[in-house]
Length: 556
Ligand SMILES: *[C@@H]1O[C@H](CO)[C@@H](O)[C@H](O)[C@H]1NC(C)=O
Ligand SMILES: *[C@@H]1O[C@H](CO)[C@@H](O)[C@H](O)[C@H]1NC(C)=O
Ligand SMILES: *[C@@H]1O[C@H](CO)[C@@H](O)[C@H](O)[C@H]1NC(C)=O
Ligand SMILES: *[C@@H]1O[C@H](CO)[C@@H](O)[C@H](O)[C@H]1NC(C)=O
Image (cartoon, rainbow, N blue to C red; front, side, top):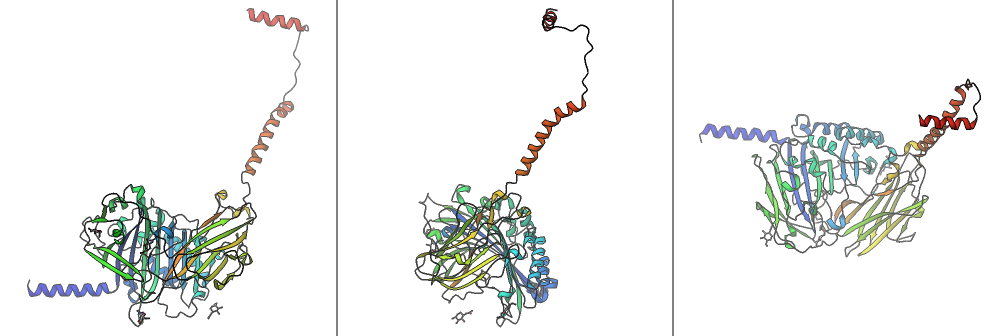
């Protein structure tokens, strides 16, 4: 190699270093088997935007950046989810999400009129993702006081909760229209890189799927004098291996195709396979992993097989092969899980029950946020904890009563759950009548009630799906030496059937009335319009003569 070539190479290297310094893009895929027969795949695309150079960026999605800067958003979380995460069987996902659409955001402290800014933000995102976020109004928005905390490096975190707004739309359905604009935000779109695996035909067939966008500000340096914007796009999918009809999985079986190499613009492209379950149910990875990472965090020992994917355009297919047929192994439940259901019969009163199960041997502190729409009035006086009105499990309480067509009901409880116990929260509601235009087209289907949010300080990081690298959800806020791990979880949603008028009645009345009119009209019309004319006759014919005439005709 001549000297000139060497100098040329160094120059190219330096130029590329300067160019890359603006933004970086990382793609990651985590695959984790759930015993006995589910498989969790989690995609994470992280774009780090150097806030100074956001004008001439080539990696970050401009449309989203513009929304974030125009509405002065500090942190934003938006998810669209179909299906229900089963915490008891599956442990905790990287990001939990409420069924349907969920949006919450913190605005910067410069924003004074947060409510109007919130409405504008949801309208803008609604256009960007083709979702019905424009249905977010004051009557379904709350300001959580204890349950949600920012993950950003907020420079002025004086009055955090007043800048926060939260809304969920449990009716929203996720479909291809939402996935396409979501993919457009990625630098490689869907031609190359991990997003090529996100084939809408395959992912809408899973048991659970959730797509999300999470924007936050993070410190670029130790003293936090410089701030970067992190845009994290996530996809969570849970496959039922019984539908694939074998415990052995591969990219082709899961996504319908292999991986066509890494995105050429990505700084790193990594696939992690959680092989911790190899101890209970052995399997082989094909091809064998490049390296194995051991992660020890808060009482959990996790082993990941790691693949570094290159952008050489070669098809990569990773798969697992199990040996002989294994006996099914059941997973033990995570430290805390929950159940939610509706009580009552008839069309007058009902109740929502939330059961919280602490499966751990120490007490766990949780915040429970109940958010009921205005058409489901819940009364604080009817709150019962384990059947009692007064309970010393409640450490703190916040209640904001709803107002008809203006404000939802919002209750937050900070509780200490005793070890190995089940705590039952019951709260009663009344059914009310809506105005006739307020019913959805399929009113008899029932009305969705959003899920409750449970924020817990978990004493152990077991059952988390966390990555052994930065960029994992909680890494910025957990210090590995801290004795607890924050988790924000959602219960399942619920459905109530409100008293619904019989919408077929007007139709029945119209039909009946029309039939009567039609039946009455014929004879009346006949009588009124027809003239009675006497037959010109010769000699009157007697009855016997008539009969005789009849027979004569027959004989002819
Ligand atoms: C936070 O803001 C709200 C509304 O703007 C205000 O009522 C409250 O007093 C503020 N709290 C603090 C600690 O400044
Ligand atoms: C699982 O364990 C077996 C035997 O201990 C080993 O041969 C195999 O490579 C392991 N599989 C993975 C994916 O680590
Ligand atoms: C939770 O973690 C423990 C220990 O790592 C494991 O035995 C159990 O199966 C896990 N449960 C779930 C639901 O993942
Ligand atoms: C984590 O906590 C330990 C002890 O509380 C402290 O010494 C350390 O500096 C913390 N690390 C970070 C990154 O905050």
